[in-house]
Length: 547
Image (cartoon, rainbow, N blue to C red):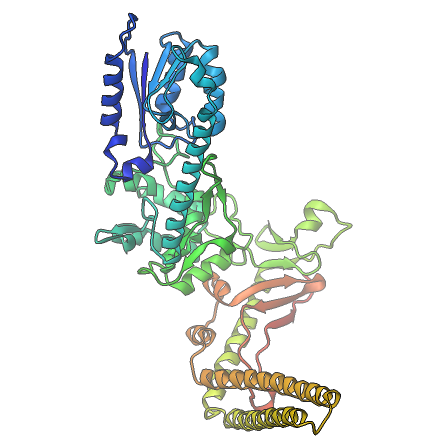
């Protein structure tokens, strides 16, 4: 016979000793010793699933081993403490009790809640209480799952880390396991990855560098350096894991490195189906500034912008080309291809070259001419930006805007006084009706008119207050250093174009037919009320001539 014992995760968290493996074993052995029917009861093996959920059979290795031994004819009797130890899924309980065990001539014994013995008391197996007990066990499991999920969601909403392991680059705080602290050694690797990526190195090149330098990948680092009992089910345990482009992309996209707690990106489908499914981003639990950041937020945003670009490296190349991911055909909006002919490099429309010459035209442009034009566009934008900031410094807190805000305040006060008057008029009309000085019809007509006026005034006040708030916000922003202006000042005297500058300032470069290009910048400077309608263009257009 087989003794089956299971301790679930919730049992292990509780203080109920009656459910422990030791106590289950003691109860079963005591009951077996009391058998006095002349038969021999030999325990072939004890099968124990310790800390395993009962909602699925696949996760219970010992349960599966017991079924295999039954198929092989080693076991003809199974004894458990109660039905919940073997089945918490109502449908599985019915399948095994009514079909599988009888088909394999196995006697099933359960001691408590519903006392069962399929050999000595076969009628008990048909008792209506048996399926009811199965439903109750399954319902208990569902309720327990809901409660645990509620507790976890509450922790996520508070920004508390609930994962078993900290993200690579962080450690669990020894004083508070729901908080993260920086792991200096791993954090240095993370910073280096971001730096290399922004310098223009491809992901594959960074992966090769890390592996050649012997930097341990996250899973090995957690096991060998941090001594954690960590396993990645997606990796082959027979092979030593290395850095991969997928691992690198995960690190480059993870907002936790900015100091924000991001959780709930995956969830178990249900308490019975232990399969993870992706959660829409709008349903994630995101709490800002919960721990020390490893990556500056502006650096992180630059990387996210770059990751969205269609970037490739040439054969045997480690660095990305200067314009990789930024060039688009102005007509079909597809990424431009790169071709080298002798000493010259050209860009051309991919649709034209690889798909159909009927759909688009060549849109060819030489690299050296393109680089000069883009550099000129950047220089002009920087010049205008720096001049813009100097002009702003001379505006002396924009007195005209201050005056406009004062006027808005005066108008708002006037509207509010009119609203107060209407309230008094409504009260007077009501009193006239009560004193029988006007008819009910007259009262209703006048009241509706006053209500309409009051509603119009309320809407006007709301609009004016919104305008005033916008004006005050603009006044507060004057004189502050705009992040874009800071970037312009940093590159004020550039004489050559680098990929770092392209990433920081440019959104898209469109190439037109006959040598025309347009450079779209990431930002347009704030315009306020400046002299002579001063503003910086967001797009610069150039004609390069025939290519």
